[in-house]
Amino acid sequence: MKLLTLLTILATTVTSQVIFNHDSPSCPIIPPISCARDPGTSNSCCFENPAGVIELTQFWDYNPTTGPDDLFTLHGLWNYRCSANSGYPQFCDPSLEIDSNGNTIEDIIVNQFNDQELFDNLKRVWADINGRETRFWAHEWNKHGTCFSTLKPGCFLDFKKNENVYKFFSLAYKAFEKLDTFSWLVEAGIKPSTTETYTLGQIQDALDSKFGKNVYIKCDRNHAINEIWYYHHVKGSLLQGDFLPIDSFSQSNCPQTGIKFPPKGTIPQPNPRPTTTHADGPAPTGDVPARSYISLTGKPGCLISNGNWFTRGTCATYRFQDAPYGGVEIRSSKGNCGVVDGRFICNRSIDASKQQFSVKDGKIGYGGNSKWCLGQKYGLQTSVVLADDTCESFELVVS
Image (cartoon, rainbow, N blue to C red; front, side):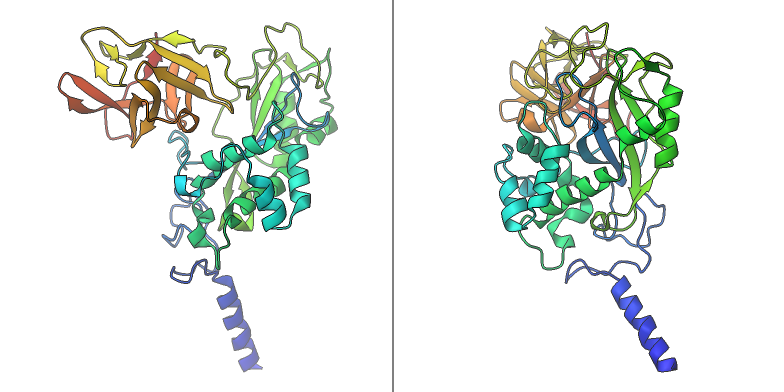
């Protein structure tokens, strides 16, 4: 009897210590939780690190419409760094990227991994406003999926080509299915309407009570519900899908009262322009100018066309354009602008599709970080780099 008990304990210990790679150390018996102060291991195959806050984001695209009339569609599965103000990684590993047109996704899911059901479900819930679903999905994998530490090929035992891509889409769908935003709102009496409006408190209570933590609610310029973000930590590898709800890092931009929930296909009043959460190529809307100088708060001078700070001569005119799937692309006469090794730079070798900025209240950010610092000097010019809490920071503003 004692021998049987001992063998049972040993078997449990061995099976609990999941080995993700023949050459890597095993993970703790109790899986670490992302963003824990002491995870008990430094093996990033055992838990999401350093970006351990996981967001499941959903759209309510009402005009133009996407998806069924009774469904908030999937936007993406993202990861943020653990500190509320430290931003998020993006386009982390070019070697893991897939064709940006999405031409390989159906082959990966349906042919390589024999999962027609998943592909059909994704077509239903992960809709693109321009009807280019697989291109949208490829963008989400390349921008966010390549940044999950536990989805690296080395974290799989007997890794099969594209297995991490398949798992990303499978995990995103499974997480989405557990967060039925539309039903939760309707259950609380919050229904799509062309006449009724709701308070932020009503919407917040309806979703928070189901999710168990504070949910981020985003409104568009019509004061209509536009997006819902659910924040999590994850226990162990993302592959286990053990998501733990946490409070949102962000404060809602919605008004306290008068929030609209338009039926899909309708235009609320007043309506300056239809909502397009991920439209291609037009001049940017809202507080993003089509053209502008870029200045530094608290400092003289401005950015010149290569992205450096200069206090003499003429400021460069920068051009701003909405990126196809969210964010803003920035260009100067030198070419597209991006952040390379932390440095703001503009030249013709920059791929704009992998360099998505944000512009909010006139402030330029990148990867969730809107703080910048001065970097290396080049004669009379000085480079501008993302702040990392070790330097005196400022903001880049359109002017």
